[in-house]
Length: 403
Image (tube, rainbow, N blue to C red):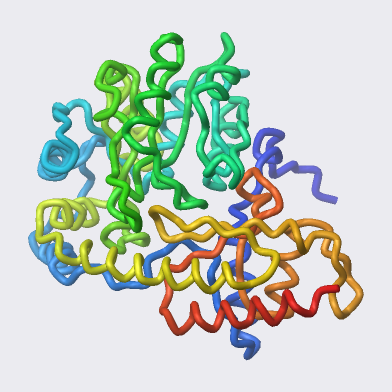
């Protein structure tokens, strides 16, 4: 009998990524011959721009295949500094930049390097599925503030004020938002900043990975740009995955005060040492090169967003708010909770509803519970218009069968 315990108590407190689990289930069904429309993963369906791929190939031919410094190649950090200056009117020095294997590793490094046991991280919900688990894994305590569709999915200054305690270490939020597509306006960010200015012990982590994917007439504003007086305790997180269709390349970056980025880079040095040298060259090419791909992709996301907003709004019982950015729809589905499926199973919550839609409608979605609020489902529209039209039709048919 094996007496070895392979999972620590801390590891046991977190779960695997729910969106990835749904995607894997959908892939398994497709492998068995089922035609599943997968709206579960937040992954662009476009190919990486050709000039970025060519830059990576050239890097390999030039022998740029060895370790880099933990904070990355100088050419990439220069590209990141130039990006912030060009696109956000923000000036960061080279030693105020940190890079990681995706924005997710930046989050890991930040919480690993800063949290003490019991420190609280204030997170508005709905939140990206990994935020709270990463906090818990590093000994922190998520302080969840629910912000439903009736709140436009955004935290108010009053609710933020009420959530802050002496144990508050970070305020973490995402704009444009995964899973809701909500964007904080400059005025809303300034109002939040006024609250945080009164609590100098709280640092701010602004996840801006969907910065370029704006579908409404609301200009994106970086938190550091809206609240420059809080720059010395603000960490801006970004990356190349979403804007440049580079999810598998794994390259995220952050900008913040050098005393903080020094900590992040130290954590990086003891985990993967550095991101792939080849990916770093590719990322620099993406940031420095022509941006026409981004504009073309965003125009398509906007058209898809309008398609799904109109289509799912027409389904009785779904409460839909048009996404302002990113590529997600997050309809409220309270009208279907408590109903019964044709096979007799009860739809007790949004997790059961997502399971029903997968098995009955052959549509893969992610339940709102994974994002900290119920009852909702998240639908990614980073797929073809043909698939989206099919998903709308299948969802309407499947929901109509519930009694």
